[in-house]
Length: 422
Ligand code: ADE
Image (cartoon, rainbow, N blue to C red; front, side, top):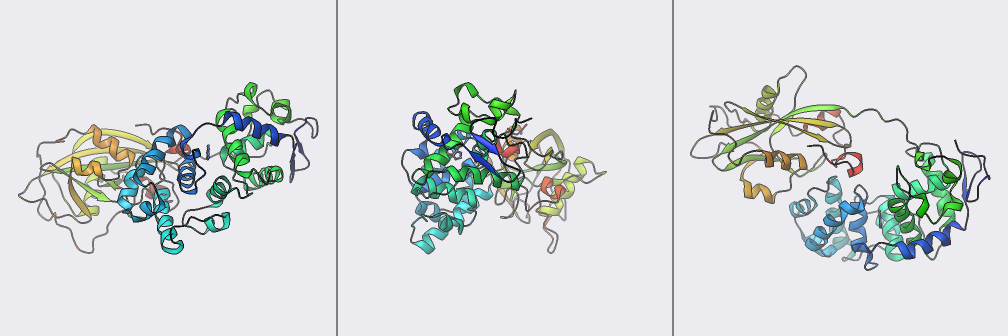
């Protein structure tokens, strides 16, 4: 696939453990970036707070998609103090739609730690950033280098792709060993006085020119130094990835239970998939179980409520990072002078629901239901009260099925890039 080592200027593979990049890559890259740099909102000033928020968003979201979320978040929480003072609910609401909600929970926790422990002063070094909740190697290095010029490499997927092509690295990019090798090669060339620009230029090149499948090699400032370009018919064939097992497919049933102009919603546990968001009761359909029976069972298990007839409202598909789910939607309504007592739920109007942070799947599902989903066809049955000691089934349908609840990322599939198919 790749040509022999040293056959092309730019990168020399000198065995499986080391890669060297031509030093001339650096001025070319920086000159190009000085001209091509997009005026993205977090680039207006070199300030750590906006850069931090942007980098957290950009971890799983493309620039074009991230910008509106970034603006909304910064409008709502313009300073670390404002973020720390906010309720988690308000933070989740501002993050709604961006996915991977642990990011928002961690931002909030980190802001509180900065205010409580550091008098609101943001850390300046990678090591100090690293101590905050949710701040990993990449975010720490990105903020420290972009905001304060600390000479540390911040390498994300776009920069890695550029490095892999420069070096014609054929080993799978998802392997830690491969990433380390490329990281070391890039770090060796990082100019100590322009680390932020170097890091950002790599990302920018990867995002605008060195595209995943169809790189625009004709517009690239580095052609003489790119081994992939020099040695491959299709430089877009790199980087390679290890084969991924297909995502498990899960079926779940959810119920919109109506009392007067209110629907029953419940909050997910703070940790885990979609933590802290609100949704309709429901859960995984067991093997050999009919969707309607599952809906009834989940509703009973989660809230203690027993209802009459469930009206089917079609299905919705949604894809998460680790599994795909088909949601079977049902509606029902209950009567009574007062809303039935439920365990762990809340009867909310549509307007109140709009103010809650909801998963995309729930939002879509609600938009599909009529305002008054069904005339009262059943009504709460006797014994619908919550039963003490009953299991509160709070695990999401899909996550439970994968057995990976704690780890499953709650963003849309493909690192936030593929739109949910619903
Ligand atoms: N992707 C991640 N961080 C980025 C940044 N600062 N600019 C552009 N794209 C990015």
